[in-house]
Image (cartoon, rainbow, N blue to C red; front, side, top):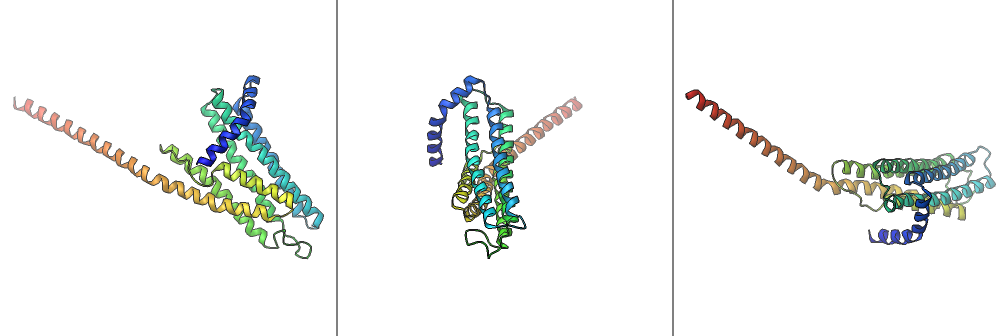
Length: 267
């Protein structure tokens, strides 16, 4: 997409001096990937702790505000950590340090990072069941948290399936990268809505973010499946044609051998 290419170019102009410095210091892309993953773990820790205190039996308004602020801090750390996801790939390409293991390591930690952060948010909704007499409409009401937890889980499923369909398609020889809700979009929506939740002390921001990811990520996954249908069918037809040609060659060779053996028997 053009807007993604434009944003990437702008970010690369900012981080390229940093990339040169890291390369001179001997920092490897795998090190950068690992640091980014640790940042995601810290962000998830903020979300999980917020879920813990917001699910307390003796919950009061002050505790809820602390929990909402922790969600915001978690979002800020998540946004900062996402920069490492761009730096590692750029460092690998600029420094000619690309490797198959590095690609595997990056993809693996990306999946873990996304799952643990969304798991933390899911816990917040499942544990937070406020007394309606104590809180206003800036928080989800009793019983609503369960359904928002389900929506967040749906976002987790969609996020994983978007990545899975791409990996499976590439394993079958089809390049499949398109869609509305790829990993950068999902990370930005999660980070921005959690930051807004902390700044405004309003949980509906992150609830809305999870709803957007749940809807568009699953649409993206199915869109990728539909995109792969035609090229996979064409690939199957070509493979069938090759097999038929091989079978015809085998039959032809067998006929020639039979003729030769008959000719020798007549002699």
